[in-house]
Image 1 (cartoon, helix red, strand yellow):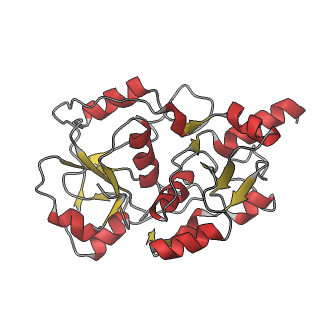
Image 2 (cartoon, rainbow, N blue to C red):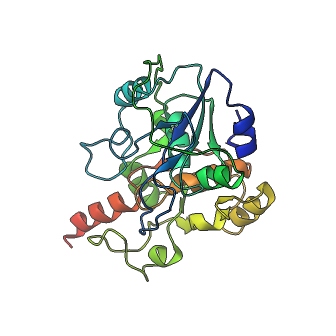
Length: 275
């Protein structure tokens, strides 16, 4: 499947028996932005609850990817099968859906796409939306096969500050990256990880959809040399996946994400320095 699909493509393929549509919508963005589509969804979509069911509730940091075993169980509850063709969307256009795309890649599932423009684009095409979601599905046979190399750890990032082997692309705003704006999580200082560059996730989007491949290549070329080994980061591993998917569309190959991102880095660095 393609990395991204259009609302028109999805509408034309609704009768595919192997197609599963996942709604990964959140109530608001990290900066508090909301949408009037919170109670709306694409018909027959299944709610992929990133916060409650698809994050590690025992982890010290938000949005931590769950274990393969937990991910597998939750996917089976949603009726997802090994042969399922998955399209994931969110109600912001493109916000949380790339995180889900990446998670399925981490768990070894290749047939997954992001709906470009998400629910706003679906509605703009005058396709039907509905309120409420079916909660009970026939259990699926999904099996997770963890691709551990796609998850970058704090220890790897620390090692990279001493002997650089990859470049971190940070999706936060320029002010947060430069330390001139506060973090949304008030206990954190702002700033950046050594050997990182800043491409705010908003730079790869236009009207809620990804920019063209050529435009994305230009955005990346302004900050990243070709064939550089990339790792993606943000505040807590969510918007990092927007930049990661944009880089894939532009022709880069890295799907590696620093899952703890700035939240983990800043908190653990504070502990080290006693701040």
